[in-house]
Image (cartoon, rainbow, N blue to C red; front, side, top):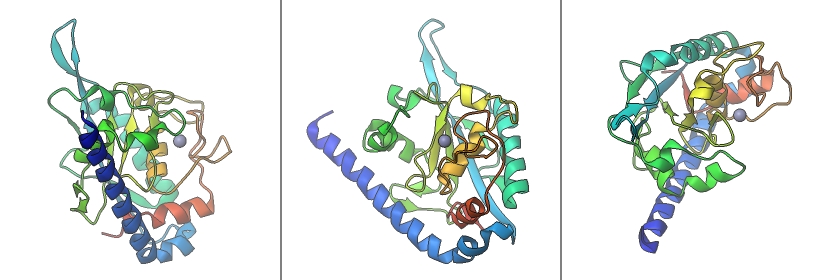
Length: 241
Ligand SMILES: [Zn+2]
């Protein structure tokens, strides 16, 4: 990659962020009712999810293998569906006819092994993986939204370095999760990582309480605070239509 193409990639990353920041601001105003009264969990809202399973090349078997099959994600989808319904009065639905699809072809190494160490996820937005994720995120073509439902795309990758899943927050419309995250277990909840990362996409940051949904480790519970419901239901990913 030349310096010019690296610079162009960084510019495109910056444009994506500016557009999403503006969109977040506009939808924040449009959803002001939820920002003020979201704790009431009324009226019902919707959240649209798309899951993309990446594939890698296995040099031993000399074939392309996906990280998992769509059916392997069902426990995580069920957990997210339940928590959204019980804690936020939000109905989860798929963007496509099925929640998950295996992406044909080998994904780039950078997209298969994103780093979620420290501030790396922010920097990666301006590199190859950020551009690749953006190109495969549902509801966007380049920096133009194509769905006012603002779906969230979950990429199932080979390894999320330092963690088992992560999401930057309102400035992107995707999250990454590996099979440790998909199969996460805990004394209170199993398979809760997907829902936790959806929380990050919808304005929530980490909360210091082990029974809370936004506790950073997989021994988390599914609890929410009233102001977390306000922030979550105010997100542009959580819609009335
Ligand atoms: Zn987290």
